[in-house]
Length: 186
Image 1 (spheres, rainbow, N blue to C red):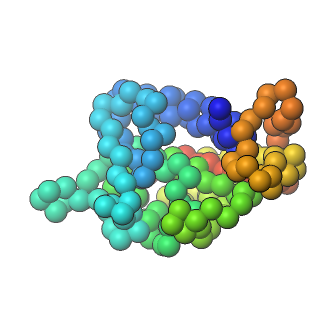
Image 2 (spheres, rainbow, N blue to C red):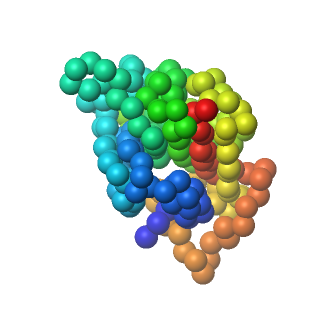
Image 3 (cartoon, rainbow, N blue to C red):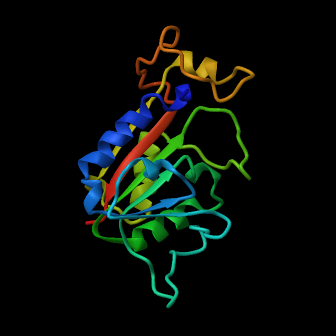
């Protein structure tokens, strides 16, 4: 079962990635498995602590910056000590025309893994991406949530599992639960 916090974000994000034509993309993911649901030209997942996106861009064996058409980060940026530096490092690893897809929580409980540091609305994500080097007009950001889901997030069992018969998933723009964005390096 899927978490209610991801019930809208996951399908919206899958549509975004599919629209990019994943079979033609060299893709990387920062500490995640979201990209495993697609067939890419190539796909590599870089896991922390072996790869720390805050410390610098990922390098190949010869010490050159690895480059990609798409870099994904699903529910990772809130755990980073230096998310602005990490965003600049992602920008450096993207080929011209490449994309960065990022999804983050906004209103969910503290979840240290190993730490929990930041939250962004859609506008906040856009600001983060602009500070990371992306042109504002090359960023599409969305957010979703409502008070019902916010209350579900306060239940003992977390994350709450989505129940299609009981859960209201209509969007209330004034109560974001999660945000996601796609930014292109132009």
